Image 1 (tube, rainbow over the protein chains, first blue to last red):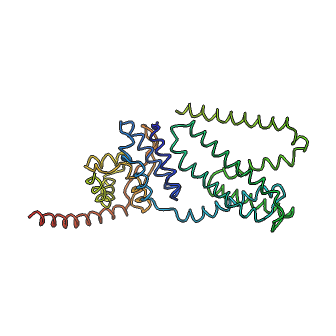
Image 2: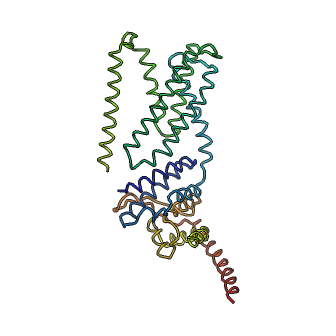
Image 3: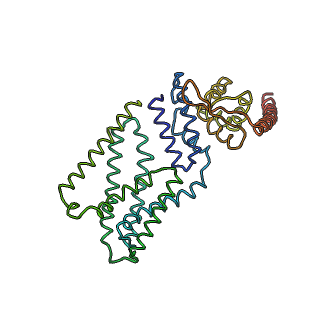
Length: 252
Length: 112
């Protein structure tokens, strides 16, 4: 079992290398080897400093410098990620049968991408540093996530009524085509990154518009049901946090 | 501090050859390799710096690796020398002999 300090170092190293565009395979190889090395070293009474030197940041830099940049992977990953972001932006309007392109939508892509930059900087730079302080880490993660998601929702609500400046308004058939393209992009990205997260996010995003279509309007606007839904989600949230904390407690 | 930094710079080209030479003795895993290097007197490098080198050597086909279970913890990756690694090691030994001869000659001349 690794010490908290070593564990934090490995997380920071992984994030550092991911940010600098090193390949997943190389990162996994180095992290696995270092983990095994640190476990054995700690068993023999050595500290993490004896393995990585007195300045872990410097050590990370030297590791980063000795690994090649995964140019080919990045050449696929960067455009693919941009495509997924655009697909997310198009997905909900298309699902609601309301896809249109307007000046507002096109300019709106800039703040959406900027908010993603804030979010990724949280994931890569801030959270790894707080590995030993899970409560603080959780509070910051929830606060920033709520801020970013809140911003997206506000942006979406502001964007949807904007019809005056629309260059293009999709017909029902075109909305289905756009929806199919978005789904194909999510699936392709999930297969490429070997992660379900793209599809899970899309599924969560679909919940609102689908519920709006299926649930009768009088139920949808009934304050009692709204309160019940909020209460249900809060309970599910508490259950997830409790499950994760108890799992963490068991492995510690 | 300066001595350590300078030694590290000097080590850069040499460490590859030394690692190949130790692996030539027989299959070895990372921690053991770092311990051996230290036992031979390499004190001024951080142990973890061997892994990027091993990864590169593996990509260049100089060493091959195999994962084996360990009773002491997680699986270990054992490295062994390939034919290309053997050729590279022989070339390194030749280059080192030439370099050593030249440096010795300069130092001896300087000492006179």
